[in-house]
Length: 291
Ligand code: SF4
Image (cartoon, rainbow, N blue to C red; front, top):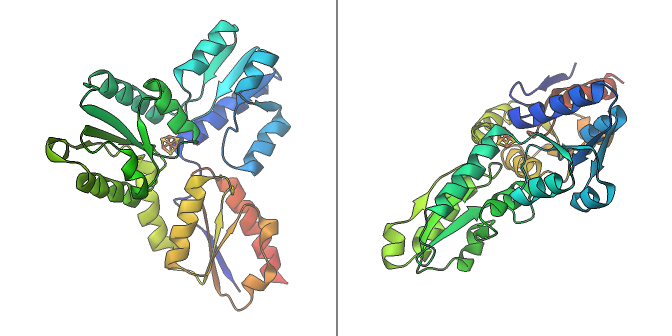
């Protein structure tokens, strides 16, 4: 019999779990609820929320639709979104993860206390990621965004640097950026380099946890939305340790061929993948291996 186990450390991160519970509670009364942007980078979960009544809209729809109330996702929003909602008298239900809210505040305080002639703010993140857009909004867009050490040339080497990170980035890549920045900066800018690794502790724990989980199985099924940057990074990490790792977003994507000659299967997922999705994949794989 094939052994199939779910990673005990997998499941939604705190911020995603909280915003999904908020959406469910708001929808219980049958009232209309609009979510600004995809609530989670996970199409299965988004479809489930849509079935409960949530309508996903983008920033342009705020002006054209003027919904009565909107739910903001865990990644947070720039101040301009709150202003727009206020202008159009739209009620805001703020699902921003408290860890992201604290980071937004920190980034703003750091920026406000800087001498901008000689100092600059650098954010390690994805320029088009909603969280980084929210962080940039705190400082009027006046920060350099680097997504890897290769972007370091965008940073002025003569100015002092204060480095922060999007919460969902890879801690190992953050260290690469730190090292590259130290090499890149000149004179007093190098000696006064400041860095705050604001990657979420849930993210920091994931890689060591996955490293010990994936070595125990013949095959790993990693479940996440294909548009989840966190999912892509964690999948690649699992595959680097256990080459028999497959990235799927639902059980139906499992090719029965993968399961032949396999005695143990481990199932894990990103911070935007629910335990119920992992259980559903597990059920599906149990059926495939039973035949
Ligand atoms: S990864 Fe961390 S900071 Fe980001 S939403 Fe989840 S709990 Fe919040």
